[in-house]
Image (cartoon, rainbow, N blue to C red):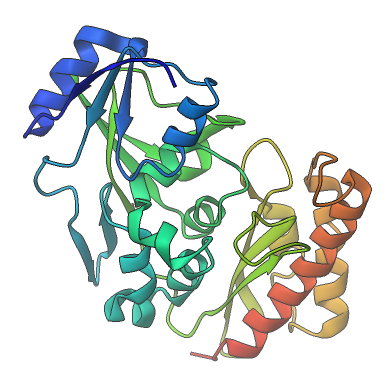
Length: 289
């Protein structure tokens, strides 16, 4: 790891001033579970490391009728264990509970996990399924970015060098919606997934699907929202046959790489398998209004 200057401002304004001054020569440090590994490998070499540790209010977490709001510095472990999150958005709590190990979840942060833009991480595809909005701030002002538009490529988001991610917000799922988070781990339990799938499914009063959203991770340069899969189920009862046919559409939506967790062809097959499993579990949990 190469040398760098370390700054720890005690306000968000101070963070934005440093980012405006140093631009792409600066990197933000939250939990450090992703960034420090890249620095050790000299894949990232910032001249200035700007810590968020002393910035107040970035660790706020709330759930109410308007939805969920998670500050950038909220730890993964808190997202997993918070009773309000578990009740209102169990899909989100489950996804964060699948991240690596408890030790990592105690350090890793919500904002860091999104800004890191690693498509193999658990939560980004879930935030897409929930229709989340990412909030960012710079010395020039603030902006809101739909989670669907936030990721550009491997480890690349639309955040500008002078911006800091401050929080992420999402509406609550429809009442009675079923959910599932499936993670295929061909190696150890703390490894990245070969494929992960998040599903949210809501029924109408007749037991037909009125909403279905599916997100897939580890299967493309960015976490994916796959509208075609959900659209194939709308207006139908969620039978095994309908779910299987919809899940097949995941095959053409993904664009995986060959790696130690499997070949691209194998991952395409697993994307279909785990999409089918996720939709089936979400359907079993769904309740008619």
